[in-house]
Amino acid sequence: MQDGAPPHIGLCVQQFLRQHFTNDRVISHAFPTAWPLRSPDLNPSDFWLWGYLKSLVYRGHLITLTDLKDSITLHVRSISVDQLRSAVEQTLHRLQTLHLEEGNHIEQHSLHR
Image (cartoon, rainbow, N blue to C red; front, side, top):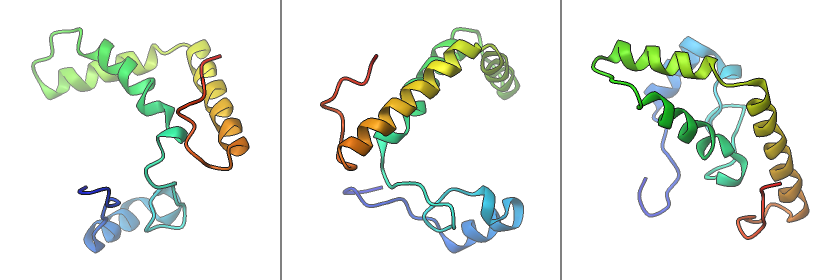
């Protein structure tokens, strides 16, 4: 990406994704299931889940790609139901705030409850 341009998805990539995953399983502006462009307000996984997992995964001594994959699998499976419930509740709260703000950025709001 450069200068705020949206990500580009080439025709060969679209063809590959359609062949291996079908239109219904791909979320992209080039497919029927669209995702809002550049919307950090709707994607708390980028802030909580990946940061949380990265902090756990890289604690260990990773030498090979297999080590990395095993560590990711182990730590994803260790996420508790309460942690997932909290993430879903925060997402719902974000969606409600976005609705009230008519889709405007919500960074100025306190989103932690």
